[in-house]
Image (cartoon, rainbow, N blue to C red; front, side):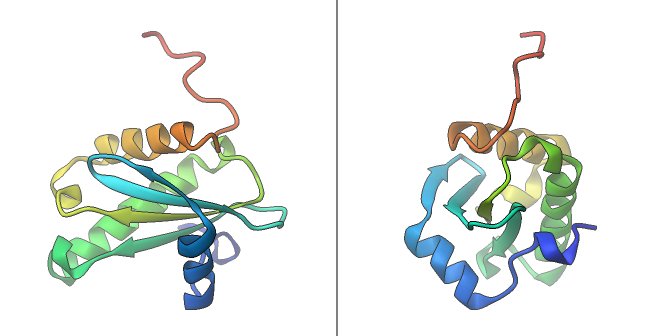
Length: 120
Protein backbone atom coordinates (compact mmCIF):
# COMPACT_ATOMS: atom_id res chain seq x y z
CA UNK A 1 0.00 0.00 0.00
CA UNK A 2 1.21 3.47 -0.84
CA UNK A 3 1.98 5.42 2.36
CA UNK A 4 -0.52 8.09 3.33
CA UNK A 5 2.19 10.79 3.29
CA UNK A 6 2.85 9.91 -0.37
CA UNK A 7 -0.78 10.37 -1.42
CA UNK A 8 -2.82 13.39 -2.44
CA UNK A 9 -6.24 13.19 -0.80
CA UNK A 10 -7.52 16.73 -0.35
CA UNK A 11 -9.68 18.34 -3.04
CA UNK A 12 -7.71 21.57 -2.69
CA UNK A 13 -4.47 19.76 -3.58
CA UNK A 14 -6.06 18.03 -6.59
CA UNK A 15 -7.35 21.38 -7.88
CA UNK A 16 -3.90 22.94 -7.55
CA UNK A 17 -2.33 20.14 -9.60
CA UNK A 18 -5.08 20.34 -12.25
CA UNK A 19 -4.79 24.11 -12.50
CA UNK A 20 -1.02 24.60 -12.48
CA UNK A 21 0.25 21.18 -13.54
CA UNK A 22 1.79 20.04 -16.78
CA UNK A 23 -0.41 17.52 -18.66
CA UNK A 24 0.89 14.39 -20.37
CA UNK A 25 -1.52 12.26 -22.40
CA UNK A 26 -1.42 8.57 -23.23
CA UNK A 27 -3.90 6.17 -24.80
CA UNK A 28 -4.93 4.72 -21.42
CA UNK A 29 -4.02 7.38 -18.87
CA UNK A 30 -3.42 11.08 -18.44
CA UNK A 31 -1.09 12.47 -15.80
CA UNK A 32 -0.82 15.93 -14.30
CA UNK A 33 2.55 16.94 -12.87
CA UNK A 34 3.13 19.88 -10.53
CA UNK A 35 5.98 20.76 -8.17
CA UNK A 36 5.08 20.61 -4.49
CA UNK A 37 8.18 22.12 -2.77
CA UNK A 38 8.32 19.12 -0.43
CA UNK A 39 10.95 16.46 0.10
CA UNK A 40 8.69 13.73 -1.26
CA UNK A 41 6.68 12.90 -4.34
CA UNK A 42 2.95 12.44 -3.82
CA UNK A 43 0.43 10.62 -5.99
CA UNK A 44 -3.28 11.14 -6.51
CA UNK A 45 -5.69 9.02 -8.52
CA UNK A 46 -8.83 10.04 -10.33
CA UNK A 47 -11.09 7.37 -11.77
CA UNK A 48 -14.31 8.51 -13.44
CA UNK A 49 -17.61 6.67 -13.12
CA UNK A 50 -17.44 6.25 -16.90
CA UNK A 51 -14.74 3.63 -16.30
CA UNK A 52 -17.24 1.26 -14.71
CA UNK A 53 -18.89 0.29 -11.48
CA UNK A 54 -17.20 0.66 -8.09
CA UNK A 55 -15.56 -2.78 -8.22
CA UNK A 56 -13.74 -1.95 -11.49
CA UNK A 57 -12.81 1.55 -10.34
CA UNK A 58 -11.40 0.32 -7.03
CA UNK A 59 -9.44 -2.47 -8.70
CA UNK A 60 -7.92 0.03 -11.12
CA UNK A 61 -7.08 2.40 -8.28
CA UNK A 62 -5.40 -0.40 -6.30
CA UNK A 63 -3.34 -1.36 -9.34
CA UNK A 64 -2.22 2.21 -9.94
CA UNK A 65 -1.29 2.64 -6.26
CA UNK A 66 0.77 -0.54 -6.36
CA UNK A 67 2.55 0.58 -9.55
CA UNK A 68 3.47 3.87 -7.89
CA UNK A 69 4.59 2.10 -4.71
CA UNK A 70 6.80 -0.39 -6.54
CA UNK A 71 8.39 2.26 -8.75
CA UNK A 72 8.55 5.10 -6.23
CA UNK A 73 12.37 5.13 -6.31
CA UNK A 74 12.28 5.98 -10.04
CA UNK A 75 10.36 9.25 -9.58
CA UNK A 76 12.12 12.54 -8.85
CA UNK A 77 11.35 14.06 -5.47
CA UNK A 78 9.29 17.20 -5.04
CA UNK A 79 6.34 16.55 -7.37
CA UNK A 80 2.61 16.05 -7.04
CA UNK A 81 1.37 13.62 -9.67
CA UNK A 82 -2.30 12.96 -10.43
CA UNK A 83 -3.08 9.94 -12.60
CA UNK A 84 -6.42 10.06 -14.42
CA UNK A 85 -7.71 6.80 -15.90
CA UNK A 86 -9.45 6.58 -19.26
CA UNK A 87 -12.39 4.39 -20.22
CA UNK A 88 -10.26 1.54 -21.58
CA UNK A 89 -7.98 1.31 -18.53
CA UNK A 90 -9.77 -1.52 -16.65
CA UNK A 91 -9.43 -3.96 -19.57
CA UNK A 92 -5.62 -3.90 -19.69
CA UNK A 93 -3.16 -5.93 -17.65
CA UNK A 94 -1.09 -4.72 -14.72
CA UNK A 95 2.09 -4.74 -16.80
CA UNK A 96 0.49 -2.63 -19.56
CA UNK A 97 -0.65 -0.08 -16.97
CA UNK A 98 2.83 -0.01 -15.47
CA UNK A 99 4.43 0.57 -18.89
CA UNK A 100 2.01 3.42 -19.58
CA UNK A 101 2.64 5.13 -16.22
CA UNK A 102 6.41 4.93 -16.62
CA UNK A 103 6.25 6.05 -20.26
CA UNK A 104 4.15 9.10 -19.38
CA UNK A 105 6.42 9.91 -16.44
CA UNK A 106 9.42 9.70 -18.76
CA UNK A 107 7.75 12.05 -21.24
CA UNK A 108 6.99 14.42 -18.36
CA UNK A 109 10.66 14.27 -17.31
CA UNK A 110 9.95 13.21 -13.73
CA UNK A 111 11.88 9.94 -13.73
CA UNK A 112 15.32 9.81 -12.17
CA UNK A 113 16.58 7.18 -14.60
CA UNK A 114 14.49 4.81 -16.67
CA UNK A 115 15.05 2.89 -19.85
CA UNK A 116 18.82 3.42 -20.05
CA UNK A 117 19.53 -0.17 -19.07
CA UNK A 118 16.77 -1.77 -21.16
CA UNK A 119 17.66 -4.20 -23.90
CA UNK A 120 15.73 -2.64 -26.81
